[in-house]
Length: 500
Image (tube, rainbow, N blue to C red; front, side, top):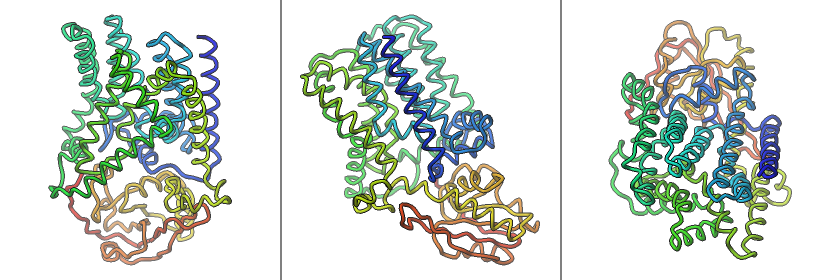
């Protein structure tokens, strides 16, 4: 056990250092969600438009220590992912009394695409995966020993998960379903209800904040789930496209190379009905089906169900350990190939000389979405200085751009958004640009595209400057932005749109 512990710590340390070094040396900027969550940390509150408070708290702590840098923002993801891999190791070893199984489960997890994304980019998934894994570790201990303290520990872990991302609430119906299938007698005992009580404490700041803010989080989640929003006629072609995108995306994000192990896990579950496999596979199945149902009527983001996949590698390594030797060899090589592919995906420019541009064009490369923001922020800073702007504000019609500029414009100014047809977001809950009306404030506006906005041309005294900023990635222009500077805000006529 000790040798596997040491070896895993060494592997996790190497992977973590590599991620930090990549972030410190790459020319790529923060993902816009990362920048938005950082901006929340500059405006601390008990909850936010679309997420609970903890993602801002993590940013507040680490950027407070290390400064407003890319590394400081992403360090939370690195630390949480290290802890998640360790918990998978501990749970796998505990469930099957085999530390080598836990070790290989953790290694397989490290190279799964969904885990790489959550461990590299600091989103709410980063902490949710950790607290989901921690909750399931303590729930396993609780259901196996029936000791009250483990139910309390599980409740505390799930409460932190709920304060990291609202989908943690799904742990409650899942654990009830597990006990119905495996040990219904425990539903008559106090343990599971103590767990629910401790967990429910996390609802307090969420509910109080929403009471004060017109329940916008609930409206937003309802809109994402297709419960609230525009009533559209059913489109069978669109529905089939959404379903196929969802199903294919889930295979890809777990890794198609590991899909045979997943099938083997379900086959063994149906044959032997081992409680360990039920415990691991039940959350993945239920959550997968939930989002499959949503995909019938709308597009589901590929990362939405991944928190329920965090323990899948335990089941897959378990069935491989009992399979023929050729499966063990395949598992080893597929894990190595998956890790190597992640390295190549994070460095696509290294393959462009071999014709990779024809396979994945820069404009279609997901990493291209991270290009250009730091340079654009510096350009805005230069224009502000060169034009001698003293009373000014930076704004956009996109919360993505406004968040990025808050992080990358020198001095980290508070930025603003206007509504020219978008859905609501966190910026709508903060003071807007109306506070600068008729006070001789100039506006620095940023948008994707090149069109003139009539609302801005009539809302300011005049436009001082308009220039285009071209984002170059892997040698190609992948996006074009307009940077515009306006003199003396009077009033911008925004749109009142009730879309969440």
